[in-house]
Image (tube, rainbow, N blue to C red; front, side):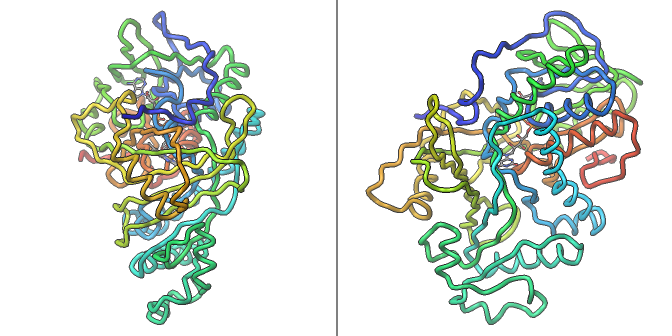
Length: 456
Ligand SMILES: Cc1cc2nc3c(=O)[nH]c(=O)nc-3n(C[C@H](O)[C@H](O)[C@H](O)COP(=O)(O)OP(=O)(O)OC[C@H]3O[C@@H](n4cnc5c(N)ncnc54)[C@H](O)[C@@H]3O)c2cc1C
């Protein structure tokens, strides 16, 4: 059985000293969770307000989903834009989509301020479709995007497909026709089952290394206002009228505001002493999935890419897909390779299941991913593929699959930037900026990310 070995954690500085909470403290803002959401939230609060910030992490910086993902920087919602419109109406959906697209600029801001020099590749990435139903689903999405004034992702459909004749007139202008040879070459596959390809801006980052570098910057820039405490689990948050007490086992933290950046699926209790109960609502709003990934190294002879392969012909937000990234990767000291990493179908987990990063990597997932790679991407039957990295991570999914960012309506002391979902790098950064706006007392417009006020 393989272990959970992530390529992103492999690149961290393992000599970094992890400071634990060793006394009771008082701060303006307590952030629970030091993944990309917690670190981005700290960054924007420190930059845009004069508040003191303490981040509390039960284990180690970026060792949650942030250290176990695919590292694709993308701005789409897995449920699709058309679905967002159905759920929230065109205006809010459009604002929400724009907000995530603009988070590229926030990512740049963090890079520039922090003087970061770690790799961030940007390129046009692709998604391959295998059925007419999927083509229609994505065309409907493009139509909604076009009506909302958003950029439409170009789609090329294989000229050889019979269904080309049947595509409804309303979608004309939203796709082009290309020889199958070209579509397959774009998807870097010989698999004839792919019938269309979508293109969009994508990127690749090691989000754990990103957190580490931003942390170093924050520690240097705000020594008086910022602290990170690792190996400091928060068990309980007690909310009062205008402040909160956090129980971290042997010590407590008093704070004016608390921001949960916990991914979502955690054993933490919230006691609201000023208003209605929030604990049950918080726990029932989120469900868990485990994502599995495998990675192998190659000679550095191809440019970076990110390709999603929608191999299940049924369209829709609930279907799993395979996602592949290729990027240059420094493995052992000073040796550059290409790292190919592939994620496959997720696994739903029961509410009571206790997920652990220590769990082994099940053989069946390695096999599934290997079958996919050999069928679609790296098809030489004689090639020996050695998966140096096999890893899994927990994703907290919100009911509507949209990140939860904002103030808890039952008690304004509490805020959230959580609900990891399948795509969470840009949404976490967007969330960090929005939480900072709340903390700064700015007027923040209603959005699709708001916390629902009614009890579920
Ligand atoms: C397999 C996989 C592939 C993915 N691929 C992509 C991708 O390609 N692109 C993309 O955009 N997104 C992807 N994601 C999602 C993305 O990684 C997440 O949305 C993002 O990392 C979430 O960051 P976070 O900070 O919210 O959560 P996390 O990184 O999970 O951080 C939460 C932190 O909170 C800590 N914590 C929890 N409870 C407590 C407590 N009580 N006390 C103290 N600390 C606590 C945890 O230990 C953890 O460190 C993927 C996720 C997975 C699992």
